Image (cartoon, rainbow, N blue to C red; front, side):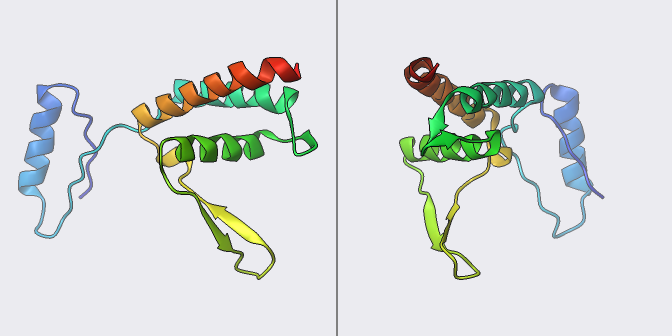
Length: 128
């Protein structure tokens, strides 16, 4: 038995409640803010693509994935979340560990987009 309910109206709430009442002992219920949506994701990637095409970092242009990691890590630090630098498992260098955008809530994703837009306003025009 597995269920997923978006609490958007009374019928959905009633269905979620019924599923909870009929679930076997030991089952777990989690209620959380929704994750990012497809429009947000598309916007994020378009914004990062613009940065990747126009802004060199550490001496050269970087790909979208690198910019996504750089901008996400900077945003997380700006909001007071920790970024960890851990010794690499193979003993060569360090790895950076932080939350991935796929784990962000809709509101966190909106904050990240706002951060990237502000960063672009200050940095992309200068590099264009």
